[in-house]
Length: 348
Image 1 (spheres, rainbow, N blue to C red):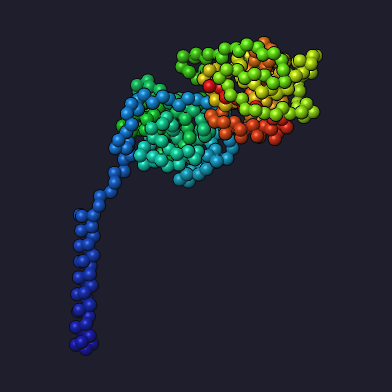
Image 2 (image 1 turned 120 degrees about the vertical axis):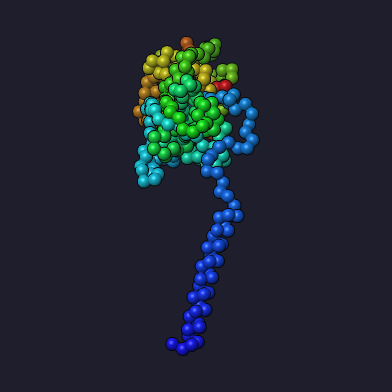
């Protein structure tokens, strides 16, 4: 080895040593003076709306359970989940958590925008949308929430609450044991989901004279509709008179008082929204027979069907739907399947 080779090797080793020291110094400087991490704990926004404790609970409505979308089987963190697709009851106990500003304004599993100040929740398998009662056994508080998201996926947790729902339950400090109960369509229809059990029937309107079209009841807004020709209209029960036969055809009318809930379901004043009328009948038996036929042909519609009646007319309707658009979508499916033209009415 020449003298110049020895000098070159010594200079190279010295250079490497200085580079190593500079890297270490840079890392230490970054740790000391770099920007700090944002806190990992979720929470409310800096300025929350006033009077959140007075935010009303979610108002249960019958919203159809649609296959696909958020109700399809899915996998998270290597675990498979199969959402419920029918109107079965569900009750469980476990831990509740909540999510706030980190998800504010982001899309939920339902496609809706998350609002931490609304009364909503996330559940792993409950149908979307659903309504659930959540109870905190530690203080006896209860809330009604609308399930529109998936989660939580931590072991032992059964529901993820919005910030307002968690605040009203008194569980903002972290996870807490809760009891969760899904509110079924039947409970919504009859009003039995209310703790006081007070289901108030709609007062009967004066009986209109039998005619191909009937005047709307007060507080209802029917859409104009063309009646189907008798040749394609299913008429379950023959009638003896011309006036009765006219009343057997679907009529442009609004919902009246519910008839006896057996075998048809009775509705309460809480069942507001948009309804799809499928038929109007002179006799109760005809309405119930047609209800059974429609239920057999359209299983997705069966849980939404009910007969509203008064002394001279019985109306088969499906609902309630939260918006006119959803009612129109359902009416289109019914029209295509049954070859008749439904009527949309609004109960306020």
